[in-house]
Structure formats: structure tokens, C-alpha cells
Image 1 (cartoon, one colour):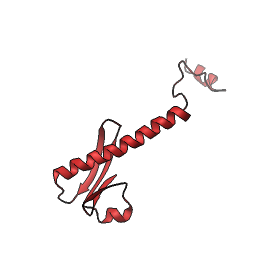
Image 2 (cartoon, helix red, strand yellow):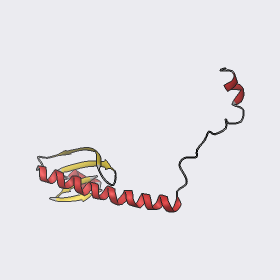
Image 3 (cartoon, rainbow, N blue to C red):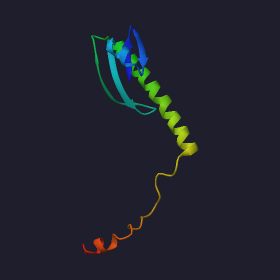
Image 4 (cartoon, helix red, strand yellow):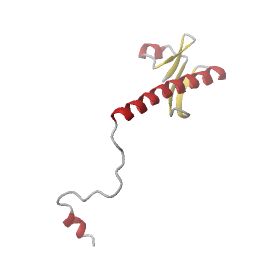
Length: 98
């Protein structure tokens, strides 16, 4: 989330800061690109909006990099090739569909 508070862009503003914000954006994306934007503003210039999106993307990239680093150190494989065997006791129900 990026907000413009007293003329400054703030990442992850507090609820108090949001109450007085002239721009409030929720930005989602990847390290490389903005994927979704929601928000509201009070007659904010286009340049300010673009700058807020760039600030938001920078914050997202920082978080995404930290998650990637964490996943490399701690993560488990997300996919095991092949099929999993049916859970115990499920085979009779599966056979009933033949």
C-alpha cells in the first residue's frame, strides 16, 4: 500500500496516516511488474500517481526478493513428479465408478 501523506509518499501507512491521505493505492505485482492497482485520490497529478506506482513496485520487489531468498534457504519442493497413491480406504469408492 502506498499513500500520499502531507505531500510525501509513504509505504504501508498507518491507519492514522490513511485518514489524511490525498492518495491511497493498493499495489500488487512481482519483482518486475505491477499486476493490479486499486485506490482513490483527491485530484492527484499524473506524475505523482506514476511515482507512487514506482515506489510501490520497489517495495514489492524488496519483499519478493526476501521471499525468494527465504524459500531457497528453507523451502521444500513444491512438486513431486508422478501420481500419489489413493488415500487408505478410498479404493472401494473409486472402483464403484467403473
